[in-house]
Amino acid sequence: MARINPNYSRLAAGYLFPEIARRTREFSAANPDAQILRLGIGDTTESITPTIIAGLHEGVDRQANVATYSGYGDSEGKGDLRESLAGWYDEIGAKIDPSEVFVSDGAKSDSSNIQSIFSTDSVVAVQDPAYPVYVDSNVVSGRTGDSVEGRYEGLVYMACTEENDFFPALPEGKVDLIYLCSPNNPTGAVATHEQLEGFVKYARENGAVILFDSAYAAFITDPTLPRSIYEIEGAEECAIEISSFSKWAGFTGVRLGWTIVPKALRCEDGEAGVLHGLWTRRQNTFFNGASCIVQAGGVAALSPEGRQEMQGLVTYYLENARIIRDALAELGITVFGGDNAPYVWLQAPGGMDSWGFFDKLLTECHVVGTPGAGFGPSGEGYFRLSAFGHRENVEEAVARIRTRLTL
Image 1 (cartoon, rainbow, N blue to C red):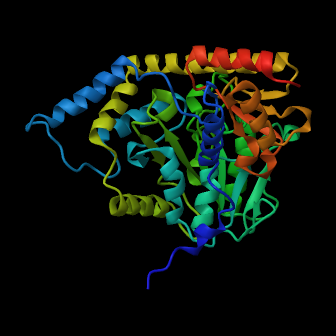
Image 2: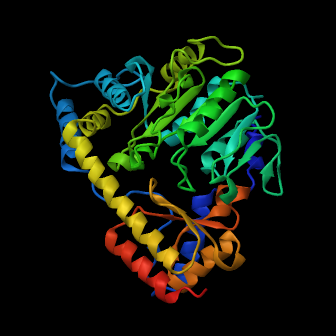
Image 3: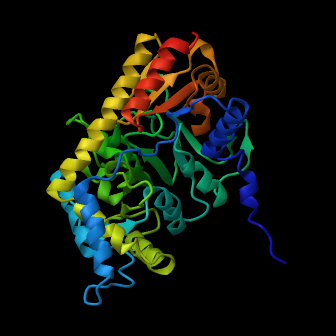
């Protein structure tokens, strides 16, 4: 008799973003004349730029000619894209061999799938608050116990608070897998070289592996801040980096990302090369590679013209973030992030809880944001607003907050 995976029943509540959608849908049904403006889910809104579109068209055209048609490609990714990505890392001072780059359909899936090469009894530490997929995928994989008062048993929560500038202290005990995200989603905080050096030292001393999500690295404008963990000496021995074209190139619906698994990477019971080999095996066994058409768009995105256009998109969204941040600060609301990241993290005014402020913002301003509590226990009392939106919508949302929000 077939039986379900019992770990799914451990999930404490509905996934954050569907819950936001449900509440918004119910409000709209009750208020059909209300125009809802969304500063919640981090989905891009501006169109893909001309150079990248041309690359995608070229990828399509190749499929229309028998001389250039391609079927299955390498599961690890097309060689020219892997080389282009390695070249970008080289420019920022991180030495990566193209063979260490694995192209995928996005950072979210890799953040979950990468767990399959590690033992199911691994002790996992996550930044708190954290992007929900880190936690939920480990729950489903059986690495945690039940949720008790908002915390999963067996999971190590590394609190990110105003007191520590939203970057956690090192775990007090020994852990095996460490999730770090910089620039952070949801807080917008960016790790410094010194902060990452501490985690690299810890991981090397304890045989741990850091799973480093750098999906928002393109938004770092401060040249003193690292855009890759491989800018830290020794990180190639203890860190896997996961990243994406989603926010950089507007590929949220197109789907293209990559994961770096260095050959020098080791863990407690695996010497250098073992984890690289396991991930290679995993990809060849369960994945047929990202779309060759989409990968052609990725190559175009990394061309000089493509990168210039992508930077224009990044600048546009960062200006949105500045508009949101400045307006909230003028109202006396405590705000963080929004300078080297596309997210503004704010303290819910008046001591409100996160979902209470969600309902207040929706009811009074008809604006949707993201409750901090949905990202973990340390997110309670905070709220995330996203800079991904059309400028006119962002400006209208900010105008409503200025004039309608009662504080």
